[in-house]
Length: 290
Image 1 (cartoon, rainbow, N blue to C red):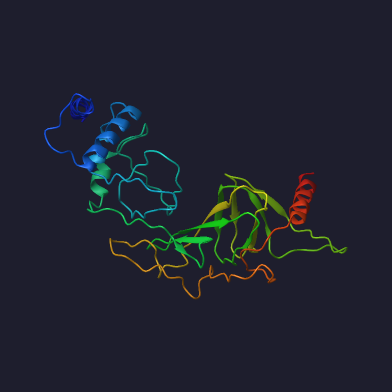
Image 2 (image 1 turned 60 degrees about the horizontal axis):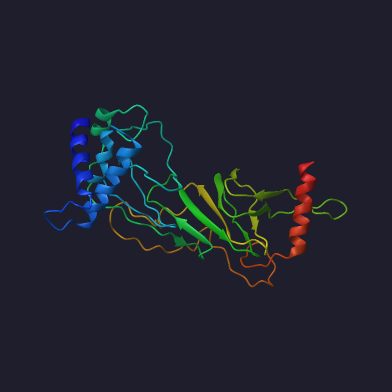
């Protein structure tokens, strides 16, 4: 209740002062929970949901880390930027920390009340660190984080399922790997410039994409690609607290071969992009703009 919240906030504010002497050695989780409660109370004044850190796992996840939440598990994002991928649902139930409708009674009846902390998933190379696979133990979805370093190209595999990808860091170019040529031999493939925040939909059985980053780019380009779970028997996040080996399937569509920079072919990594390539790409993009 708001009355209980007010009493707790008064106590926590008093304990946060330098003059207060705690009657016992305060454990780290208690200090962390207290700071989170005070912070949430400032963001959502009068909302009893600010007490959530007392009964939820309060986590600080690093870049590249993730965790899987099954259905009927409460959660809240406090700060920072994340990627959230979820199965289709027409039922979102809220209980606090929001200005929207709060259906507390319905939420209490539907929660799983499972104890324990989540398994932190850092992704599995598929097959190299250039493509990290985040595969939950459910069939609806999985996420790939794809990194292309400056001066490299990477061709994505053929996918028979629809997919969505978003540029989350850096910039580069994308084109289909099935290049088309006009009668005079000119490359007529469609090029797109990828900047942070741009998203694309890939229909089923679309031509594979070739991602390119120029040598002059200061940092890598990263994209997040989401589609139906194609590695259900090799999850990187367990349904329970048990650990699963994150091996790559031999039949995985992401089992891309790594080749030397001098080797030709559509499936490769670490191929240098020359300045002439980028000049031609920029020229084609200017043509496409008109």
